[in-house]
Length: 143
Image 1 (cartoon, rainbow, N blue to C red):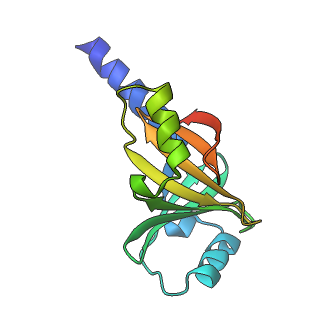
Image 2: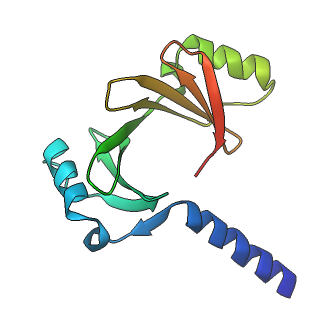
């Protein structure tokens, strides 16, 4: 029983280390100011700190959205949840061919400050990243 509790505690600690929920009061003023300029009508925001950056999670027109910024309020990326069917066909084809029998659990459209679009397809707690045309770029462990 002690071993189970230790393993469960370590697992929880590792998951919290990747992205930590924080209070709005702990978010730097430049980050909050950038968010307010970008989304002045959004009042309900969930803040997280992830690898030194700040992520604002919110609903935009009933779409789960997040804005990632550095401590100075510089926007690093905007991520919006999309339907799996909205991914480029090449993404679905890649997952079907590379991971037979696996399904895409969630999909997102990511836009960087220069307007570069990438897509994210979550399969088995891994995020597969694709360029705007659906070509595979890399994969990473989901935060």
